[in-house]
Image (cartoon, rainbow, N blue to C red; front, side, top):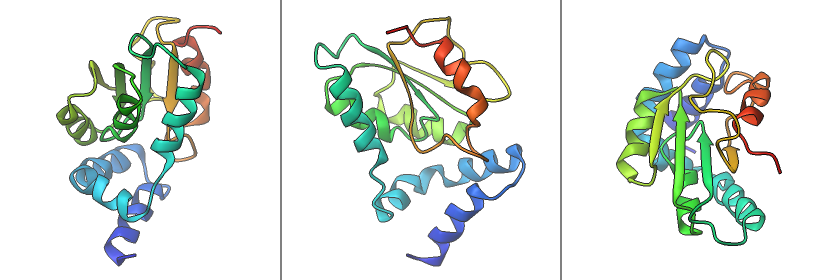
Amino acid sequence: LPAALRDRVAAVHRGSALPERLRLYDGWAARYEQDVAALEYRAPHLAAASLSFAFPAPRAEARLLDVACGTGLVARELHRRGFRCLHGVDGSAGMLEQARSTGLYQELRLCVLGTEPLPAPAEHYDAVTVVGALGEGQVPSTVLPELLRVTKPG
């Protein structure tokens, strides 16, 4: 892998303060998809395949929240499988700008999980995804109750 790519990946996973990490993601947004393709990143594909198994049909009406949606990689995979009601949240304005350009989301909101609640009422979503972002220095595991709050039971 190119050294610049290794450096970008390492920078966002260091123990830097949240404002610095968000700034790094903002700066990475335009190159993000090219970089993760070089890494052969398959998590969005695998997550969408798993969710498709849970929602055999019809999928178009299932309301899904893509947490830490980044540039919209998960939305592309979900849309390919028939999901149409996609909402996304991310802490990086730069990433949201890229996601918005896909035209796949019905709603996109800036939200820094762990510091603020999700901008949704209780039991609003049929499913919530967090792909490649749940962990130390990214989306903290302490947000799990908040993810459950906005997800319909069942």
